Image (tube, rainbow, N blue to C red; front, side, top):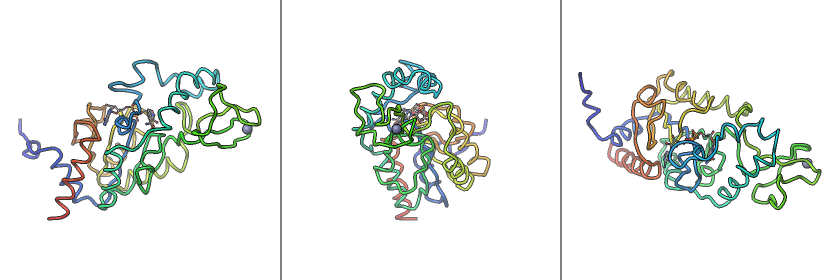
Length: 258
Ligand code: NAD
Ligand code: ZN
Protein backbone atom coordinates (compact mmCIF):
# COMPACT_ATOMS: atom_id res chain seq x y z
CA UNK A 1 0.00 0.00 0.00
CA UNK A 2 1.27 3.48 -0.89
CA UNK A 3 1.33 5.93 1.99
CA UNK A 4 0.62 9.52 1.02
CA UNK A 5 3.49 11.53 2.62
CA UNK A 6 0.91 14.18 3.48
CA UNK A 7 -0.76 11.69 5.79
CA UNK A 8 2.32 11.65 7.99
CA UNK A 9 2.27 15.35 8.85
CA UNK A 10 0.25 16.83 11.70
CA UNK A 11 -3.43 17.11 10.66
CA UNK A 12 -3.71 20.62 12.16
CA UNK A 13 -0.74 21.76 10.04
CA UNK A 14 -2.29 20.23 6.94
CA UNK A 15 -5.65 21.87 7.65
CA UNK A 16 -3.92 25.22 8.25
CA UNK A 17 -2.06 24.89 4.93
CA UNK A 18 -5.34 24.31 3.13
CA UNK A 19 -7.12 27.17 4.91
CA UNK A 20 -4.33 29.69 4.36
CA UNK A 21 -4.55 29.08 0.60
CA UNK A 22 -8.37 28.93 0.50
CA UNK A 23 -10.43 31.38 -1.53
CA UNK A 24 -13.81 30.89 0.13
CA UNK A 25 -14.41 28.99 3.36
CA UNK A 26 -17.78 27.94 4.80
CA UNK A 27 -18.43 26.21 8.14
CA UNK A 28 -21.28 23.82 8.91
CA UNK A 29 -21.76 23.53 12.67
CA UNK A 30 -23.85 21.24 14.85
CA UNK A 31 -24.67 20.70 18.51
CA UNK A 32 -21.09 19.55 19.26
CA UNK A 33 -19.65 23.07 18.92
CA UNK A 34 -21.82 24.18 21.85
CA UNK A 35 -21.11 21.21 24.14
CA UNK A 36 -18.28 23.16 25.81
CA UNK A 37 -20.80 25.96 26.47
CA UNK A 38 -22.71 23.47 28.63
CA UNK A 39 -25.40 22.53 26.08
CA UNK A 40 -25.85 18.76 25.70
CA UNK A 41 -25.97 17.43 22.12
CA UNK A 42 -28.58 14.96 20.90
CA UNK A 43 -26.12 12.20 19.96
CA UNK A 44 -22.59 11.23 21.00
CA UNK A 45 -21.08 11.27 24.49
CA UNK A 46 -23.43 12.78 27.12
CA UNK A 47 -26.12 13.27 24.49
CA UNK A 48 -29.83 13.47 25.30
CA UNK A 49 -30.24 10.40 23.10
CA UNK A 50 -29.12 8.31 26.06
CA UNK A 51 -32.12 9.56 28.06
CA UNK A 52 -34.82 9.85 25.38
CA UNK A 53 -35.33 9.69 21.64
CA UNK A 54 -35.08 13.30 20.42
CA UNK A 55 -36.34 12.28 16.99
CA UNK A 56 -39.59 11.38 18.73
CA UNK A 57 -39.83 14.08 21.42
CA UNK A 58 -38.61 16.91 19.16
CA UNK A 59 -40.94 15.87 16.34
CA UNK A 60 -43.72 18.25 15.34
CA UNK A 61 -46.31 15.44 15.58
CA UNK A 62 -45.36 14.78 19.22
CA UNK A 63 -45.66 18.51 19.98
CA UNK A 64 -49.06 18.87 18.26
CA UNK A 65 -50.42 15.78 20.04
CA UNK A 66 -49.24 16.79 23.50
CA UNK A 67 -47.54 20.20 23.85
CA UNK A 68 -47.49 19.89 27.65
CA UNK A 69 -45.41 16.68 27.47
CA UNK A 70 -42.86 18.14 25.03
CA UNK A 71 -42.57 21.35 27.06
CA UNK A 72 -41.96 19.27 30.21
CA UNK A 73 -39.55 16.74 28.64
CA UNK A 74 -37.49 19.02 26.42
CA UNK A 75 -38.29 22.69 25.97
CA UNK A 76 -38.31 23.72 29.65
CA UNK A 77 -34.80 22.30 30.22
CA UNK A 78 -33.55 23.79 26.93
CA UNK A 79 -34.76 27.21 28.05
CA UNK A 80 -32.99 26.92 31.42
CA UNK A 81 -29.71 25.86 29.74
CA UNK A 82 -29.84 28.25 26.78
CA UNK A 83 -30.85 31.30 28.85
CA UNK A 84 -27.40 31.26 30.47
CA UNK A 85 -25.14 29.69 27.79
CA UNK A 86 -22.17 31.74 26.56
CA UNK A 87 -19.91 31.27 23.49
CA UNK A 88 -16.81 29.10 24.01
CA UNK A 89 -13.33 29.25 22.33
CA UNK A 90 -14.68 27.34 19.30
CA UNK A 91 -17.26 30.06 18.57
CA UNK A 92 -14.76 32.88 19.12
CA UNK A 93 -12.13 31.03 17.06
CA UNK A 94 -14.51 31.06 14.09
CA UNK A 95 -14.93 34.83 14.54
CA UNK A 96 -11.13 35.17 14.37
CA UNK A 97 -10.98 33.06 11.20
CA UNK A 98 -13.55 35.43 9.69
CA UNK A 99 -11.37 38.44 10.63
CA UNK A 100 -8.42 36.72 8.94
CA UNK A 101 -10.51 36.46 5.75
CA UNK A 102 -10.63 32.67 6.11
CA UNK A 103 -14.33 32.17 6.86
CA UNK A 104 -17.17 33.74 4.89
CA UNK A 105 -20.32 32.08 6.24
CA UNK A 106 -21.42 29.82 9.10
CA UNK A 107 -24.31 27.47 8.37
CA UNK A 108 -25.51 26.30 11.78
CA UNK A 109 -27.95 23.59 12.76
CA UNK A 110 -27.93 25.01 16.28
CA UNK A 111 -30.72 27.09 17.70
CA UNK A 112 -28.69 28.59 20.56
CA UNK A 113 -27.66 31.89 18.92
CA UNK A 114 -24.06 31.51 20.20
CA UNK A 115 -22.35 32.21 16.85
CA UNK A 116 -24.08 35.60 16.66
CA UNK A 117 -23.35 36.31 20.33
CA UNK A 118 -19.65 35.56 19.69
CA UNK A 119 -19.68 38.03 16.76
CA UNK A 120 -19.88 35.96 13.56
CA UNK A 121 -21.05 38.25 10.77
CA UNK A 122 -22.90 35.89 8.41
CA UNK A 123 -24.79 33.08 10.13
CA UNK A 124 -27.41 30.99 8.34
CA UNK A 125 -29.76 29.50 10.92
CA UNK A 126 -30.82 26.28 9.30
CA UNK A 127 -33.16 25.27 12.11
CA UNK A 128 -34.28 28.70 13.32
CA UNK A 129 -33.56 30.19 16.72
CA UNK A 130 -34.73 29.25 20.20
CA UNK A 131 -34.51 32.88 21.36
CA UNK A 132 -38.12 33.45 20.30
CA UNK A 133 -41.44 31.71 21.06
CA UNK A 134 -44.34 31.99 18.65
CA UNK A 135 -48.08 31.86 19.50
CA UNK A 136 -49.68 29.05 17.52
CA UNK A 137 -52.95 31.04 17.25
CA UNK A 138 -52.06 34.68 16.52
CA UNK A 139 -48.40 34.30 15.52
CA UNK A 140 -47.14 36.89 18.01
CA UNK A 141 -43.48 36.46 18.97
CA UNK A 142 -42.02 36.91 22.43
CA UNK A 143 -38.52 36.46 23.82
CA UNK A 144 -37.94 32.99 25.29
CA UNK A 145 -36.07 34.55 28.23
CA UNK A 146 -39.24 36.49 29.14
CA UNK A 147 -41.65 33.55 28.96
CA UNK A 148 -43.22 32.65 32.32
CA UNK A 149 -42.97 28.93 33.06
CA UNK A 150 -45.38 28.74 36.00
CA UNK A 151 -47.96 27.32 33.63
CA UNK A 152 -46.98 24.56 31.16
CA UNK A 153 -47.47 24.84 28.25
CA UNK A 154 -47.04 28.63 28.42
CA UNK A 155 -49.73 30.64 26.68
CA UNK A 156 -50.10 33.88 24.79
CA UNK A 157 -52.49 36.62 26.00
CA UNK A 158 -54.90 35.35 23.33
CA UNK A 159 -54.93 31.86 24.90
CA UNK A 160 -52.86 30.24 22.12
CA UNK A 161 -50.04 27.86 23.06
CA UNK A 162 -46.44 29.06 22.63
CA UNK A 163 -43.94 27.05 20.61
CA UNK A 164 -40.23 27.67 19.98
CA UNK A 165 -39.68 29.57 16.74
CA UNK A 166 -37.35 26.85 15.50
CA UNK A 167 -37.68 23.86 13.21
CA UNK A 168 -38.94 20.65 14.78
CA UNK A 169 -38.14 17.28 13.17
CA UNK A 170 -40.77 16.76 10.47
CA UNK A 171 -40.97 20.47 9.58
CA UNK A 172 -39.70 22.33 6.52
CA UNK A 173 -36.39 24.20 6.55
CA UNK A 174 -37.00 27.96 6.07
CA UNK A 175 -36.69 28.48 2.30
CA UNK A 176 -34.14 31.30 2.42
CA UNK A 177 -31.86 29.35 4.78
CA UNK A 178 -32.09 26.30 2.53
CA UNK A 179 -31.38 28.15 -0.71
CA UNK A 180 -28.48 30.21 0.69
CA UNK A 181 -26.93 27.15 2.35
CA UNK A 182 -26.96 25.28 -0.95
CA UNK A 183 -25.45 28.29 -2.73
CA UNK A 184 -22.60 28.87 -0.30
CA UNK A 185 -21.90 25.12 -0.05
CA UNK A 186 -21.63 24.87 -3.82
CA UNK A 187 -19.44 27.99 -4.02
CA UNK A 188 -16.83 27.32 -1.31
CA UNK A 189 -13.46 25.70 -1.86
CA UNK A 190 -13.10 24.55 1.76
CA UNK A 191 -15.85 23.43 4.13
CA UNK A 192 -15.26 23.00 7.86
CA UNK A 193 -17.73 20.51 9.36
CA UNK A 194 -17.73 21.03 13.11
CA UNK A 195 -19.51 19.06 15.87
CA UNK A 196 -22.21 17.45 13.80
CA UNK A 197 -23.13 13.78 13.63
CA UNK A 198 -24.16 14.51 10.01
CA UNK A 199 -27.30 12.43 10.37
CA UNK A 200 -30.03 15.09 10.27
CA UNK A 201 -31.19 15.81 6.71
CA UNK A 202 -31.13 18.02 4.73
CA UNK A 203 -28.34 19.76 6.70
CA UNK A 204 -26.15 16.67 6.32
CA UNK A 205 -26.26 17.03 2.54
CA UNK A 206 -24.30 20.33 2.56
CA UNK A 207 -20.85 18.64 2.79
CA UNK A 208 -21.87 16.44 -0.17
CA UNK A 209 -22.78 19.54 -2.20
CA UNK A 210 -19.44 21.14 -1.28
CA UNK A 211 -17.50 17.99 -2.17
CA UNK A 212 -19.38 17.51 -5.47
CA UNK A 213 -18.34 21.04 -6.42
CA UNK A 214 -14.68 20.39 -5.73
CA UNK A 215 -14.27 21.64 -2.14
CA UNK A 216 -12.00 20.08 0.49
CA UNK A 217 -13.98 19.01 3.55
CA UNK A 218 -12.27 19.23 6.97
CA UNK A 219 -14.06 17.70 9.94
CA UNK A 220 -13.65 18.63 13.61
CA UNK A 221 -15.24 16.12 16.00
CA UNK A 222 -14.02 13.85 18.82
CA UNK A 223 -15.67 10.91 17.05
CA UNK A 224 -15.77 9.85 13.39
CA UNK A 225 -19.05 10.53 11.56
CA UNK A 226 -20.65 8.92 8.50
CA UNK A 227 -18.74 11.55 6.45
CA UNK A 228 -15.32 10.58 7.78
CA UNK A 229 -13.09 9.05 5.14
CA UNK A 230 -15.79 9.39 2.47
CA UNK A 231 -16.66 13.04 2.18
CA UNK A 232 -14.22 14.54 4.66
CA UNK A 233 -10.65 13.65 3.82
CA UNK A 234 -9.15 15.40 6.82
CA UNK A 235 -10.59 14.57 10.25
CA UNK A 236 -9.27 16.62 13.18
CA UNK A 237 -10.21 14.37 16.07
CA UNK A 238 -10.90 16.26 19.29
CA UNK A 239 -13.05 18.86 21.05
CA UNK A 240 -13.83 21.93 18.97
CA UNK A 241 -12.92 24.27 21.85
CA UNK A 242 -9.37 22.90 21.81
CA UNK A 243 -8.85 22.20 18.08
CA UNK A 244 -10.22 25.46 16.61
CA UNK A 245 -7.96 27.84 18.61
CA UNK A 246 -4.95 25.69 17.59
CA UNK A 247 -6.04 25.81 13.97
CA UNK A 248 -6.50 29.59 14.10
CA UNK A 249 -2.96 30.03 15.51
CA UNK A 250 -1.50 27.81 12.78
CA UNK A 251 -3.36 29.77 10.07
CA UNK A 252 -2.13 33.08 11.53
CA UNK A 253 1.50 31.87 11.44
CA UNK A 254 1.14 31.03 7.75
CA UNK A 255 -0.55 34.33 6.86
CA UNK A 256 2.09 36.31 8.81
CA UNK A 257 4.99 34.60 7.02
CA UNK A 258 3.77 33.20 3.72
P1 NAD B 1 -25.86 15.74 17.21
O1 NAD B 1 -26.36 15.93 18.62
O2 NAD B 1 -26.54 14.76 16.35
O3 NAD B 1 -24.32 15.34 17.24
C1 NAD B 1 -23.39 16.03 18.03
C2 NAD B 1 -22.01 15.77 17.47
O4 NAD B 1 -21.08 16.59 18.17
C3 NAD B 1 -21.54 14.31 17.62
O5 NAD B 1 -21.01 13.88 16.39
C4 NAD B 1 -20.43 14.40 18.69
O6 NAD B 1 -19.40 13.45 18.49
C5 NAD B 1 -19.93 15.82 18.49
N1 NAD B 1 -19.28 16.44 19.66
C6 NAD B 1 -19.49 16.21 20.97
N2 NAD B 1 -18.71 17.01 21.72
C7 NAD B 1 -18.00 17.78 20.87
C8 NAD B 1 -17.01 18.80 21.03
N3 NAD B 1 -16.62 19.20 22.26
N4 NAD B 1 -16.48 19.37 19.92
C9 NAD B 1 -16.88 18.98 18.68
N5 NAD B 1 -17.79 18.02 18.47
C10 NAD B 1 -18.36 17.43 19.55
O7 NAD B 1 -25.86 17.17 16.60
P2 NAD B 1 -26.33 17.68 15.20
O8 NAD B 1 -25.63 16.91 14.14
O9 NAD B 1 -26.20 19.15 15.25
O10 NAD B 1 -27.89 17.31 15.08
C11 NAD B 1 -28.77 17.52 16.15
C12 NAD B 1 -29.96 18.45 15.87
O11 NAD B 1 -30.44 18.90 17.13
C13 NAD B 1 -29.59 19.68 15.12
O12 NAD B 1 -30.45 19.75 14.09
C14 NAD B 1 -29.82 20.86 16.09
O13 NAD B 1 -30.79 21.73 15.55
C15 NAD B 1 -30.44 20.29 17.33
N6 NAD B 1 -29.72 20.61 18.58
C16 NAD B 1 -29.24 21.88 18.77
C17 NAD B 1 -28.53 22.19 19.93
C18 NAD B 1 -28.00 23.60 20.09
O14 NAD B 1 -28.58 24.54 19.55
N7 NAD B 1 -26.87 23.79 20.78
C19 NAD B 1 -28.30 21.21 20.91
C20 NAD B 1 -28.84 19.90 20.68
C21 NAD B 1 -29.52 19.63 19.50
ZN1 ZN C 1 -51.62 34.64 20.54
